[in-house]
Image (cartoon, rainbow, N blue to C red; front, side, top):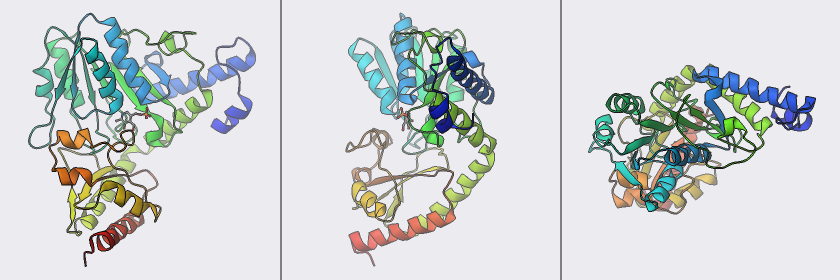
Length: 358
Ligand code: PLP
């Protein structure tokens, strides 16, 4: 079977069915899971497919909360809404949510998470890479130190912005790891959750018992196969791609730093494939619409929090003017140096036309 399109056309069987068509569909899932788990360095029964990281994060957070009798969760202040909103809901049910903020240098320190652990803590949920600023959080260190302090504590990582982009995926000490396919060129609507063997969590919805009873519902075979293929593809070239992102990043910084009105919103150690900046007095949406005229598509904040001030930039105590003007560039595998030349040229044009800068 070649690709997702062939599967939609020909392998339309329900993977739970007993007949041959069902068996063939199930085989695609089993093989995809084997492939992804071997790349991730885990067992294939430690991986479930979901519709994406929102679902994975919800399963990880609510699933562990439903199992545990304890009530305290530690998280960072800059998580994606698919982590912060479930936690906000749990707060209304009597859970205590402790949020860790960056230090004055925009860095997150593992000790700040660890020092908050008490006998009521059952979960630490922290992202690997922030989606708006590219800031890297010390997840491995947090997980290792947390287990040293209390081996019962579970560590959940929203790995969306690091998975298949950062060359150093290490799941050791991490119990739950969420990812989403569309961040690395899979179609939207497919992702996964790594759940370390024997992790204590309950399902958050019930049904036919697929995916070890944790994610009931008929699997999307075509999307699962495409997820597996894109993971193979991106992982086979991950170091070269990362090096290219670093070169693109330096080139972008050198080009954009010649624009006087532009301010980089750079906090802590960052990944090369996300750059956040503001041009004072040009609101984010104005620049977004200006650039779209040239088929340059950038974002402000998180795509999921349209029209809201970024809680991420606020956590980094950014100046209010810069907050309203923030723009996020993310590189994909098809970007090249020519794209950066055009981007820089059009941003300069925007400052001329909108701010009337000479
Ligand atoms: N977590 C992070 C860090 C993200 O950037 C995103 C999406 O942009 C998500 C979670 C949610 O992923 P999805 O929309 O695929 O469910």
